[in-house]
Image: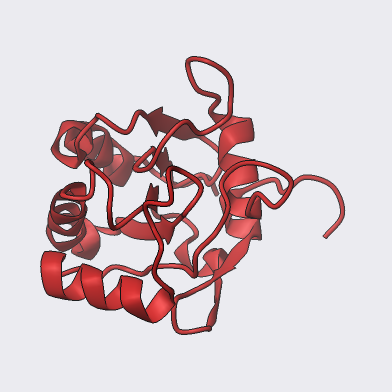
Length: 168
């Protein structure tokens, strides 16, 4: 693809089992994207993310965790270690990507898109683990949440996103 993607649904990622996941399959649904880490003070947020996944998946919400080791080496494991940690300690059943970069020259295209659509308070650079992005069903409108904003605090925005009619 040449140029910038018009929508999140124009992108894909590789899940932690090595499968290419085309985000087009989630078109018309809200998607919550989070850069995660297993050894971070915010790691307990996995529980809240799983709760959102369980509560709203039948209504269309897609939660995707993108493990990242760019912040104080807080995601040292490989994809299998990360998946096992998330399953055993937090009951995670939502999709996880392979480990990605969210900043720098190797920024994953999903995060390049998200940062372009929703810069942070101090610029678009992601400052820490568990920065959250809620992509509306139109695939282009993005809300960004700081790492200290817990998953339960964005539930109202998720309910609004679910109620939103996707663009025709």
